[in-house]
Picture 1 (spheres, rainbow, N blue to C red):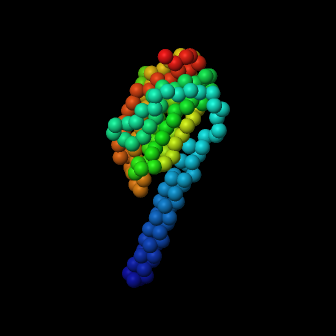
Picture 2: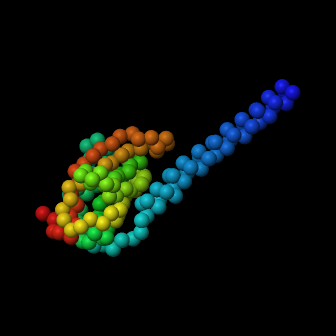
Length: 163
């Protein structure tokens, strides 16, 4: 009886170990391919925006526009988010309104050598000038654990001329 029970437990443990590894690898593969591509390929927006002042980061290796003009609240903005090919980390970028803590834009994973030129905001803002925060987080490409974070001031012009 002990032998049969031990044998069954051993088989079940092996089966569950294989199943856990399979599910983990499948979810990581989907996360790195399908979901990041969906976040990055949000469609081909019309070129109705302008951008100034691309400035490289001091801590993480990336670039993002510090000032973006959006013609209408539903128009895409030229954020020029870039993760250089020589970078060893994936990055994500969130644009946050510091007054309301609302997340206005999220890129998903941007792999090394990948860039995002234009994106639409998650919320419609009324006409005006907004002082926002761009939160850039770096992730280890193998474990997807956070490897660093940086916040930058960011100015968004919606329907008004840039200064």
